Length: 292
Length: 247
Image 1: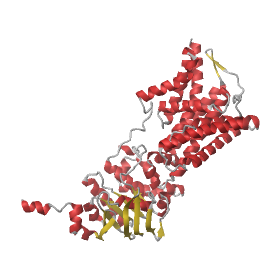
Image 2: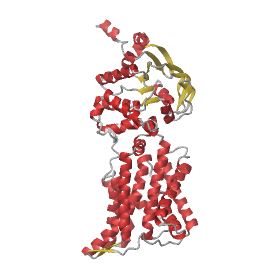
Image 3: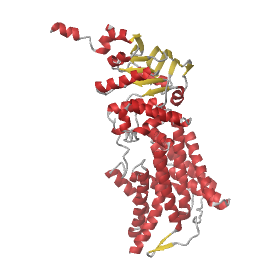
Image 4: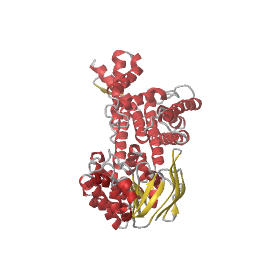
């Protein structure tokens, strides 16, 4: 029993870390633009599939492939903003959200045409043996994932709290008008936020590829799970994204392990409904408390 | 320094300004007064680039500001303290101030920025006391000081203020306006837009009166203060005699 619990916990933390990174993408973009990008999951898919191409098919070393994939997907995010978001004549939130849904369908199509319909297996980052802890097995890939997530959260926190660009980005999120009156180029900030958010999506895709396999349609469910995690922790909060990701991952693993594997995808949405009902701002969310 | 000729502005299809002219010379403190909806804020938004649907001419230092976005206008040396202050509540007071110097940091003017920061913290000592606090925790008057300080951090040649007295106690208004006089003495050119005509005209050199999109009066501030029309419409002194007569 104890052993099982631990095993499920490891699985939950691993998946949770990936949800957390996707949620970070949602939050970063929401912070700067108040926009929810429902194509976020498709950028995760692009990350996973591009890794297959660069690492496995072209044989580039993994660290180089990692960096190139993140840059390429970030660039795709910039193109997405330039071509599909900025060109909108009347940028009402609902119009933009529907555009992101359209973009997700488009990107899934592109993924299918370029990489085909078959799932592709990706080996783990390192060829180490699993680590045994109290009878449960911990995959080295899980450690990689956990480490990368922690680095990302700390780096993003430093970016927002310590750098002028990060503060300018927060300022844009709080009040675009005021920010532009101080000389902050709000369009550039939006573009950067898109690059950052989609780049984070790519990181999630790279990390999850060795665990699940990479396919053109992996993004939709991952995107929705990441969205649930972001809402759970509080949309816009970095630590909230982390917390939401882990809560969701662990709840899923426990539900699958102790109740039924059919529950896996239902749990995310049950949690989402629950949080919207009890605390719509999320566990660590504060943003809705505007005072004027 | 600033010349506006025959400015026409549209606000969602409605003409908010119909042919307004105004000029501000170097080192002057000019007040633009008018009631709610007269078009004062529309005029400021046209100057600082927030609205681009205007016709006519806006020249700053002899060069047109047409088609420029707000950051480019800030780079020319025009800084605006927006209506409602629009500080960044979750960021610290210090971060709010530093963001005011965003363009100068980008130009690597770190020495100049830190000197100006000291000057502004001397000008508003309460901001120094609270520099680590979140800006949202400041009182209304302190937030207005922060907004002014933040705009000054851009080291502007020309400062625009949109309703700086809004929602503030008379004593706080006095303090902020005294600071504006101090700033004028250092050579800064100031255009202040106010509904509080009395307070604004008391510190201004010259004044303009805007009414439903037209400039109806212009002149020395002291003349405007004494003007019957201005008294009646903006200083609320029209009925005093009437009541006195009855009593």
